[in-house]
Image (cartoon, rainbow, N blue to C red; front, side, top):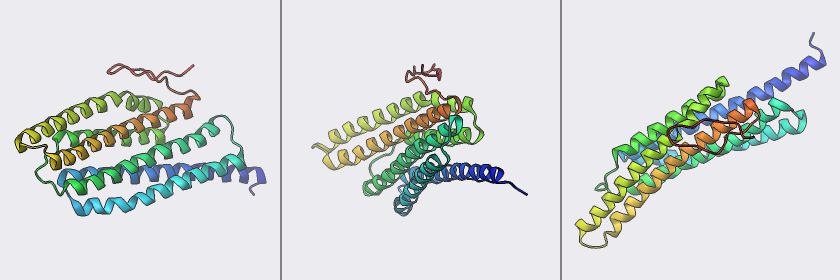
Amino acid sequence: MINQAEHTVSSYDNELAQQERRVLEMAGLVEAQLAAAIEALMKRDVESAERIIPKDADVDEYDRKIETGALSILARRQPVAGDLRYVFGTIKMAGSLERVGDYAKNIAKRTLVLAKHPEIKIPSDMNVLGQTVIKMLRDIMDSFTTRDAKKAEAVWQRDWETDEVTKRVMKKIVADMGRDVIRSGSDGTPDVEAQTHLLFIAKNLERVGDHTTNIAEVIQFQLSGAWASPDRAQGAVTMKAAG
């Protein structure tokens, strides 16, 4: 027969497990949304882009459930030490995942505009950038599942790669904008406006990379109780605990 203390511990463990499942389900949905948005962009697939936009409401609902679940645990269970860091961290992670979902929706909306401008070329490196941040997102959630601090650090260190690809993409877009203006013999306003959407998409994807590193820092905090140092040197960084 299970006594009351054992029942309470089991119930608490179930609440923590449910909180983790929600975070992982949210991450899976966000990853799928982002992957679909990038594919729709590269293929100029209007129908796919239109299907992505309303699904952002599902992402927002997960964010609310995770926040509500965390606050309920904090209020009723009053966790301490590692459990407290873990529960607090799920709120922070859900916030980053919600923003990534917003970026996927934003990319889908801009794809609808770009589909009306088939003459505008999408740089091939845009897909490289997209796949890079998707891999980072997948890896960081794997590190959350396995409590793997080293894998989280590896994702944190790769942020500079995202920045470098973003720079290449934006440089190509700006160069194309200049050529469009010269070729048109006018201000080239319609083409320039369309190219501007590509610039925003590249910046959105760069921000996805930033949010994966934010999640990496949350995982470090969950596991060690210390936040990562904000200093990050390109190509050679160490995830150091803040003093």
